[in-house]
Image (tube, rainbow, N blue to C red; front, top):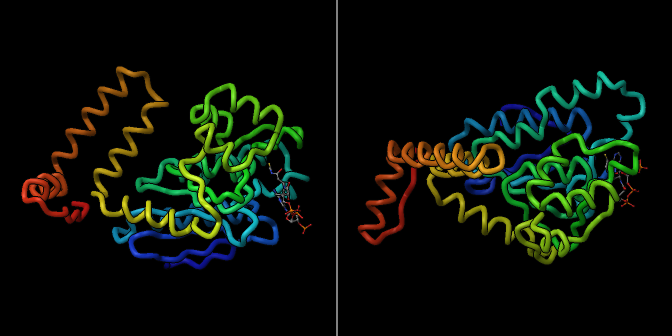
Length: 261
Ligand code: COA
C-alpha cells in the first residue's frame, strides 16, 4: 500500500483485500481519523485491478465497530458535526465502491458500525455478533444511513423498533429479520467469509460491478426506471471480453477465466 495508516490494517489475501478497523481498546469506534483512513484506503483499492473485492472487519474478538466515537460528540457543534457527516462520508464511499464489500462481523456492530455493515454488500456474522442502533440512548438518531438503509433491508416495522428502542439484537435475530446473510460459529467466521469471497472473486469484475449497480437501483428508483436501467447494464456486459469468455467457456464445458476486460 502506498499510504500508511494508524487506525486501520490492510492485508492482501489472494484476490481480496481485508481492511481491519484497529482500535480494539475503544471497541473499534469510528473517530474522524478512522473514517478518513477508511475512505483513503478504499480510494486506493478502487483502482487496483488485482483486488477483486474487499472484506471489512474489526480488530480483536469483541467488536466489529461499536459505533461513532462518542467522545468526539462531547464538544462538537451542530455545524461541525454536519460537515463531518457530509465531507466524504465513509458510508457513502463504501456504498459507491465499485467492487463487492463484505462485512465480516465479529462482535458488537452498533450505531455507526451497524451503518457501515449496512452500506456493505453482504454481512457475514459470528454467533457472538450483536447489532443495534442505540443512538436514541444518547438523545440522537442514526446519521450514517441507518434510518434509510436499515429500513430498506429489514422493513419499516423492524427498523422502527430497533431505532426507537435502541435494543441490541443477537446474530440469530439479525439473521431472522434479514439484517445478515449468514451466521456461523466465531471460529468459522473467517473461513466462511473467505469461501464466499473466493466464490465472488472468480466472477467477472465487470459483471460484478454492473450487477452491484443494478441491484442498488432497486431501492433507489421506481420499478419501470430500475427495469429500464437493468436492460442497459445487461447490454453493457456484451461489450466485455469477459462476456465472450463466459459464454465460450460454457459452450466448451470448462471454467471461465475472467480478466476484467
Ligand atoms: N465511542 C467511544 N468509545 C467507545 C465506544 C464508542 N462508541 N464504544 C466503546 N468505547 C470505549 C469505552 O469508552 C471504553 O473506553 P475506556 O477503556 O477508555 O473507558 C472502551 O471502549 C471499552 O468499552 P467498555 O464499555 O468497557 O466495553 P464492553 O465490552 O463492556 O462494552 C459496548 C462494549 C460496545 C457494549 C459498550 O462500550 C457500548 O455500549 N458502547 C457504545 C455503543 C454505542 O452507543 N454506539 C453508538 C454510538 S452513536
